[in-house]
Amino acid sequence: MFEFCTDPSVLPTGQWFACYLTNGVHFLFYQSFLTVFLLLAITAPLALAMGFGAAAASRAEIAPIRWLGKGYTAMVRGVPDIVFFLFFVLVLDQGIEYIRHLIACPGWTDPIRQGANFIVCDAARTPQSSAPQWVHETYNFALAIFTYAIVFGAFCGNVLYGAMQAVPRAQLETAEAYGMARGQVFWRVLVPQMWIYALPGLSNIWMILIKATPLLFLLGIQDIVFWARELGGSRTSAYQYPHPDWRFWYFLGLLIFYLAFTRVSEIVLSRLTTRLSRGQATAGGEDLRRAEA
Amino acid sequence: MKKTLILTTALAMLAGTAFAQDVVRMGTEGAYPPYNFIGDDGEITGFERALGDELCARAELTCEWVLNDWDSIIPNLTSGNYDTIIAGMSITDERDEVIDFTQAYIPPASSLFMGMEDGIDLDGAVIAAQTNTIQAGYIAAETGATLLEFATPDETVAAVRNGEADAVFADGDFLIPIAAEDAMLDIILDPVQLGGGVGMGLREGDPLIAQFDAAITSMKEDGTLNALIVEWFGDEAQTW
Image (cartoon, rainbow over all chains, first blue to last red; front, side, top):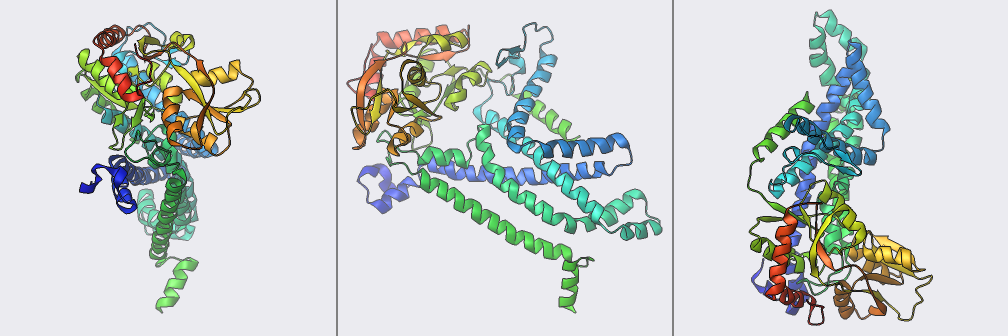
């Protein structure tokens, strides 16, 4: 990074750290923070959409759709996250390979399960072993995101279902009395008003989602926990920057990062609560009305 | 609906890459200096990186390096996530039942104990070793010591430093540089000969084995392998 970094062993402490903290591995460490943000940026809307679908399905008139929505939320909410993470990534991965195997290699006679191994024909390997490394990484990351979305979508579904039920019945009746169709009542009256009831629950889920991001490490993705452990471990002079065991400092850094991140989230969420309370027949909405009067 | 959409896009994306050039994926741990580790520039480096690149050049293969945790390194080979293991793995009969090995590229070497004080009695001592290594197997089966297993090599050494274990048992080539630089830690007890040398692991019956074997033989014959061993492990290392 800097010109004076050519021989770190002779540098004074300040410059040594300037070089150390800007070397190649540290940039990979900093990049892994972007991985975490990317995960959140994709997972949050996806989980919300799945939750919305589950909540809407849970209210459906048609029984099988209702069972689907309620079954999904009940099942995912009842299984420990970590079990679901390890299980579902495996199921998705093997499921995709199995389907492709059936399509690509119909003449295959060997058993697919051989002891602990899951062996499909080469054409069904996902991703292909000839694919570049970034495809493999993206694929694993996509599996992880999808799993996060399924797990957190179920929680969102339950919260949104409760929020939909909390919108005063009189509001919906009034809309019906004006001659609105079922869909119109749902989209124009129910959905805009339910967010204020959903927000406390959704903000909880957001916080839990932030704190669940280190689970990426378990899925073999090189996230901030992976790099903190890798960089914090003691290093001999086989490395350019030898140092003793610094895992304490690296994990302390992660702790501060998560605390700061959740604090910022809290501030944003409380502003959002104020915004959504406007004009609502809730205690929060009433406070706003009094303050303006 | 969303599910199928994502699935089909994923499949479409992957189908496009199906006919790309053949690449041999080299799986390594990246946490075992000087065998293989993540260098300061973020690239995988070490003896096995240099060796692997040279072998691939000689066998005229395009190789790509992949990191994988040690404890799942064999299952991920057999399930096809990568094509070779080149991670300081000793050739043993148990592993040979599941995967195939090339000929050894590092001669059988000594495993050593490293601890804070000499003269500990192995019976009843607490010994740290990495999970699924021949050293861990030896401590559990052949000695009266209590085995303390860790996922990474670095954690086994940390366990000795913080007093959790009396000694760490690992490949000498891994421990000697650490003992040399840490005044608190010394090589103790007697060396133990384990394993049949270090080789590359591949799936059973993989035709690549013959190609890598030929490349290793040619490096042994022209002396480049010995030079590489001395470069990374020092003058005292065993050569061919």
